[in-house]
Length: 139
Length: 166
Image 1 (cartoon, each protein chain N blue to C red):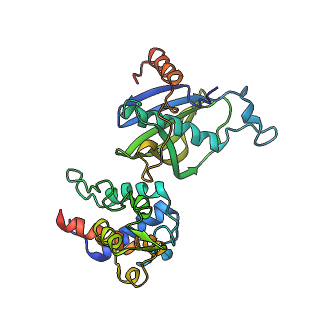
Image 2: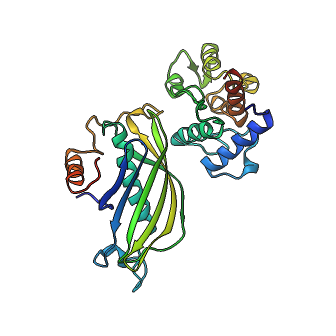
Image 3: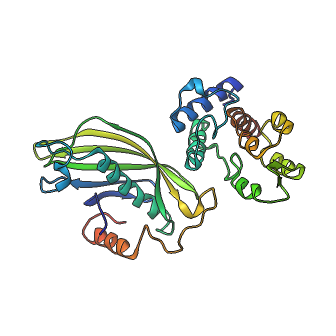
């Protein structure tokens, strides 16, 4: 079954409301998962499980999210690597690495001022929707 | 001492579902702590009973090799109180399980000799983490402090004392 972008967005919104206990009007396209919606470590696994369930239309073809694909797990390690971070900013090498790990994120705002804090904001509701949309298309 | 809030498994299907029961006795001190002269099982201990039932189910799925920790109570909706003389049944079902953890959907019911038809007490959703596989890469002690030798010995007693195999 093919989902439209709006249908995907609505399902992602429901998943985030259920997993994070937020109101649906808080889940806007640009809301960041950790900063705006308060997601903590175990919530990311919860979100992955709920997305897999929400987008499995046919149980014989389950929608699966491989570990680390949607939510990269070693970002904290990267932040401690001096070749990726210098003076509180992500270096060009670090940005290239982030783009590789998070191809579904929008880097436009981040690249204007690539601080470590701004890197935390790359994971938005839209990033999740982009990921699911691409994943469903590829299936 | 280990606080164990289930008495016996009545059903156990590896990697899928488990049901454990707990007989509630007026002799249990904690029943008297919530409301004076109105003994009930605290809701928090009902969540704990479900967490133990589900935690053993999740642990067994990986032969008790993982340190299984209750990481999140997604939902706990209560419909009725539990009183002395009643038997609680914790039915846990694995919704999803992977190398990082598991999600569980649980239903709690009660029966008693004068009320043999199960009555729903609560719906509980839980998340468990295999903490050595945690996403932040944090390190924990090597020995399995969740499923200790003492605990796995106790589980063997469950096995011999019950028709259910764990």
